[in-house]
Length: 343
Image (cartoon, rainbow, N blue to C red):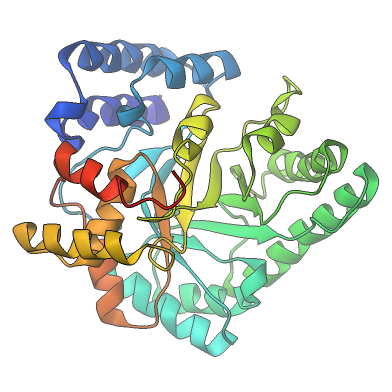
């Protein structure tokens, strides 16, 4: 019931989180109607309810972004399993455990509560130690780990390699007293559907064991997502982490994932933007007293995606989290989008 209430509140609050020109009165009625249906749902959303919800709502309303004023961690969205997922995430990069520990503590001090600790960064133990040292309650943070198993070439090897990766995540996080994670993510898909289904079987088992609360993917195309979703009993991925930035984004990425009930999380949301796009964002930022970087991140959020940022500077942590107190107009959104090199 509490989860459903969060969904309902987020659906209703979305009206204040979107530019007026992108959210019409009939669309507001859709949000209210869908809110009532979701609040009545007794447990996790069924596939039919989930897909009907995402198809019913206007693209701008997905993924139910709620603007509730300044709060620790910033605004949040609601995943298809009813978990709250903060829009801004800190994604640790490749550096030693000592650096990871210090940056984790700094990010928590600034206010980040959503973390992507990828196995590729090789510092999950450092992250875990930093979290433990912070004293922040476990229930206040959202922790995502990852598994790299795309080198497998058949169902069985993909399953075994992924299962081993799940266990390795838990061992690394246990250093910080973390005995479960909120999300486990596949860093890359295998090359064929059969192998992808092997990866997913291992993830399903981890979910069933209670060691993770949600399943996610990264760098999956719509066809690769459908390798999983062809099985009607499969758990729908909650998040698909993709390269998505001003000046360099797949025009249909957010929509194709939205139709499947999946939220896009942008990785490297600032590093692949075009010079034209960055210049436009800097100009627009002057109107709001914001940096070009903050406008870039705001564009991502208003496009219907979330983001995982990275930095080593406290000032950048603060800057990248301070984007929830202004709204871009539709004209400004369109101007920024026009800089895309992938059109």
